[in-house]
Image (tube, helix red, strand yellow):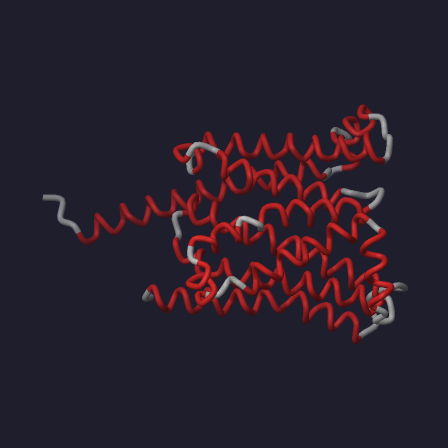
Amino acid sequence: MSPKRIVFLLRLVTLILLCLPALHLAWLWYTDDLGARPVTEATHITGDWAVVLLLVSLALTPARSVFEWMPLVQIRRRIGVAAALYAVLHFLIYVADQKWNLIVVALEIAKRFYLTIGFVALLALVALAVTSTDGWQKRLKRNWKRLHWAIYPAAVLAILHFFIQSKANVGEATVAAGLFAWLMIWRFLPPRLRTRYAGLALLAVGATLAAFAFELSWYGLVNHVDPMRVLRADFDPDLAPRPTLKVLLAGVAALALVALRRGAKTLWTGRYIRKNIPSS
């Protein structure tokens, strides 16, 4: 299959997958399966998907490097734009819940800190999505890359917004923060370690410790929970899988996938050499 064909199919599959959460949400709304508070549930679902897609867009650069598959860069822009669109939908559903009263919405954003930082993250994501085109890249030149560094503070604000609106149960927010830590630690690793098994193992451990630190800090500083209680919960098999375990499993899964990819590549290369290159 030609490289152009691979890129076309990859973009098509990506577009379909990106539309599925919205279509599923529309179906749940149509069938009245969103529970007793459908607007609140829809707000949470779209917000969750905005964070997920934001993390996926940030994961494509490490994935391209560790899996040694260049076509992945061809879908990064689409996923980033989709994250912004789900964030916009998240905001519009919230506005609809306020009866489209923009004055009330503005006052709530100004008054509630978690709404303020969520709105700032939304503005940043929209700005990045709008300027993601080749035309804007040519217009802004060197400033384009500087502008798109805003993806990192936007991700921090989005995850903090996730933590605050989750209130007492910050399990999913902790997983998101742990995965974001993995992505950021990878970027700060020496280049020679980024694709090695030792570096990937360090990433898995580092991201897990970061997730535990986020969880401990949140429950300790915000909810005033005894840190030992959090520690015991993380090692209690009856409460598994805890957020920190999920982050560790994600790191181990990344390591296993890289090993499988390289093993398959080595096997295919050896078979190709034996078949097409004479031994003497």
